[in-house]
Length: 287
Image 1: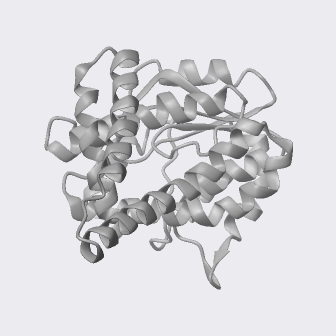
Image 2: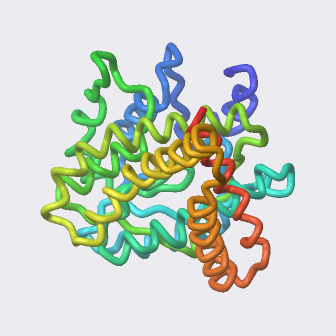
């Protein structure tokens, strides 16, 4: 929406520290990102989504991680800037904490964060220069890809031999969906990206730690097994008339263990409420 951003461009138009690039048409995030990268001259490139606000020290903390020439990309910790808006934004904020401080933090122990998220990710420009042609030329089902940019670029970085890292104290606040419709569309885009780029990641697995192999396989099989177990329990209820208590008990136990560990690590009781995420997730999987 150029009418909205035009006043912002005008403010910085005469500031020599900034260069505003206006493309002739709306060509999507990927091509706009590539245009900016190719016009840049610095050693490092910081990607920030338009709905994201960075803490004052984010750039400094990410740059410290990038001092290692083997690191091609690093991401910060994401929080929901509109956390208090609805019950869903509260759940998503906890989901982000878990994704960053469990999944990404664990992957970073092996130097291979599998997806450096778009709201706050720093890249080494010399590494990007090697990958931009591949990144731009990605196709999906015969058409130029228009989703999953962050995950695809991260996997290309890992394939090229660079490490990817997570910086937990580099905080970025981003706007998250406040209703189920937009949230479902977002999750579907992310799921498509995860499944599609897993085929690229599988080629990486022999070179990565065994934990990461388990992690990649789990990210793809976990939701499918959860959906299948829920469907089997529902079928038992409908056909046999018996309550599949063992399925419910297993899911409840796994959920409460995860939420309790998160509550202890974060020292916030609110994470016990993340147990609501499991039935919502199952409902969305079965839609």
